[in-house]
Each structure stands twice: as structure tokens, then as C-alpha cells.
Length: 148
Image (cartoon, one colour):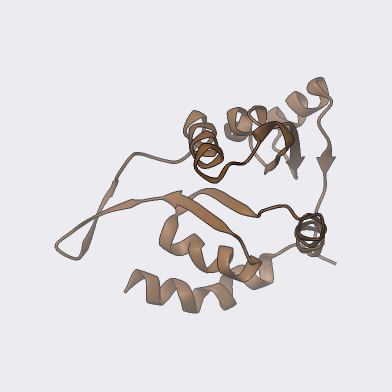
């Protein structure tokens, strides 16, 4: 039922929130032959329609625990944030043969720090105060994406 709701919510929720600059950036990556992999702290079945709409090659999200067809409110492996995002990126790079040193990652909060640090091309997008400060100190690009 959650997956069915999420599929319908994609048009109502995700599409109006997509930044034109983000979509353009994805097209630039595709044109350069880059794989598009979405690693999100969001619940996987809710984020999956977004990954599909973006034309992602793979998507990893937080997995909710389900017992007898019901969500328990717990997460299978805990929240996918912080160091766990970096670990998932490393696992995916090993599985898919992706060189993280040549990869790009985008993050908006300080909680994405480890994830951004594990790639060769980290980019802070609409960063929170702490990530903005870190990005400046490390010389990472900072993008401001907005709606027209």
C-alpha cells in the first residue's frame, strides 16, 4: 500500500519540488556517460518513484521494518545517514565497479559530510550552515538551486 501511495505521490509531491538546475545537472552527467545513483536517507519505497522519474541507474534508501504486512515504525538497518551513506557508496562502488575518486556526490546537510568526503567531486547544494562552512574550508563547490 505504501508503494502504491508513493507512486501516486511522486507526481503530487516530488515533481513540483525538483529544481530545474538539478535536472540540468543530471542531463550533463548523463551526456558525459556518468551513472546516476541516488543514495537517500528517505524511505526506499517513497524515494523510488523519484529515482525512476530522474532516470536513475540505481537507488538505495532507508528500509522500513515490515512485520505481517505492517510497518513497525523501526528501520531495518537504522537510518541511512552520516557514515552509513559513505559505507553504502563504497559497497555500491565495489559492486558496480564505480571509481569513487572520479565520482560526484551532492549533499545539503552536514549529516552528508562523510558521504561527500568519500568521493572525488563533492558538491554542497543549498547547504545548511555547518555544511556551507565545511565546503568553504575544503574548497568544495557550493550550488544554490531554486525554483524560477
